[in-house]
Image 1 (tube, helix red, strand yellow):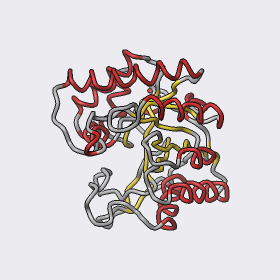
Image 2 (cartoon, one colour):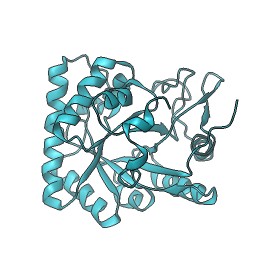
Image 3 (cartoon, rainbow, N blue to C red):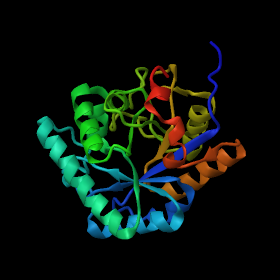
Length: 267
């Protein structure tokens, strides 16, 4: 099989505003921040603080809406009616957008959180619900979803720009889904191993799965989880590895010409 001709540019995103205490230290190493909108985590104070950090650091700000389930950090699977999901997302986008406007920060993207994100990767109806809410709220926002899953496909159907996301510190299964949290080895704790996986994804376009296969993977944006105990060191190590490999870090709003619907269909 011929090698994939992949660009040497990547967005490097992190979930922030979730109360982990690392936000200011992580900011210098990333290009996009996914800001918790007060449902699974965060409040007005954390949202304002994170937006200000984005403004000061030149980091693209995006919304990170999740299920209103703080007890389980938005990682518990919920079966809600589409209208209820839509209303939860709409309220979170409105809340963050109002604060962003007050802080003089433009929102660039939307990336669902936790269980909502993972369910939308496989559930086309849920993915369409999310994409429709985002489009109706602001059709210039970029919808971020698991690479080659239902969520970016729904974004394309809704006429949005989409970004296919991959993960440095999560193991994949042979169907390109993420190994469920709680599965042994699902989270890569060893920073060296996670950095190696990130470089394989960005440079070679493939990843070795937890079940022993090697699969192709699309990646417009690479995620770092901000709730890791070693998140700051991990972010620094990844940036250093990218620099050594000649990979340039650009936020999604500076790469939007490569994220149009027409460029993503069939990739």
